[in-house]
Structure formats: structure tokens, C-alpha cells
Length: 129
Image 1 (tube, rainbow, N blue to C red):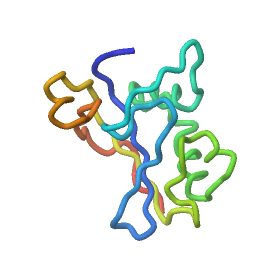
Image 2: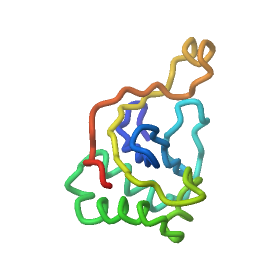
Image 3: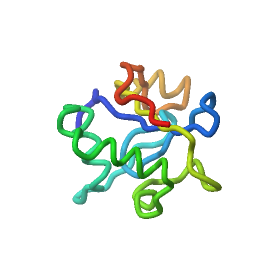
Image 4: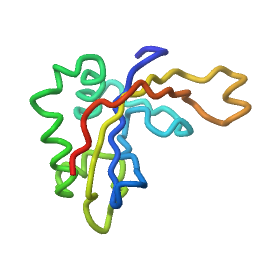
């Protein structure tokens, strides 16, 4: 919807050192992944996370419980995602980071193959064990 956007990236870790991102079906995530078109529909969780990036207060009632469901490996929650980076057992910890995304320029796309350029803004939510 916009050329510059803030996105919440949720990651999990089995050991506290290596972090793997949870990918969503319609949100930017991996900068190398081509953007998807879902119109005229919205993927509900992806849509909620877009608003959460705009206003953390909006997400206060449901964001921490979402992270808790990922820590539990809740199947219903995981079905809302593009994939589960922890198929064998749930992660030991989860965290959320805020990033600023923008589409790459034509020159950047040719040089890197990336669709998005992203910059870390900072932590979005504390790490949950």
C-alpha cells in the first residue's frame, strides 16, 4: 500500500543464539522474496501486524498472546503462517523486531536480486523465554 513501511518481524530461537524468522503469507519478510498480491482479500493476521507496526498500542491486547502461542507450537496459529521454522519442536524463545522496508530501486534489484531493502529500527517486543 505504501512504498515505505514499517514491519514487525517475529523470530524464534532454539538455542538463544541462532534466530529464525516466521514468514507470513502476505507481509514482506525475506527481502529476496517477491511481494504477493492478495486483493481483494486481506490475510487477517498479516493485516493486523501491519497495523501493529504503525501503532504498538493497537497490538497490546493480542501481540503477547500471539508470541505465547508460537512458543507453545500451537497448530492453529502456525496454520496462519507461510511456514514454521521449528517443525520438530517449538522454539525456546521468541522476539519481535521492527524494521523499515522499502522497495529496492531498479539498480539495487539488478545488483542484489532483492525486492526489498530493510533497515532495523529496533526491538518491538521483549524476548519471551
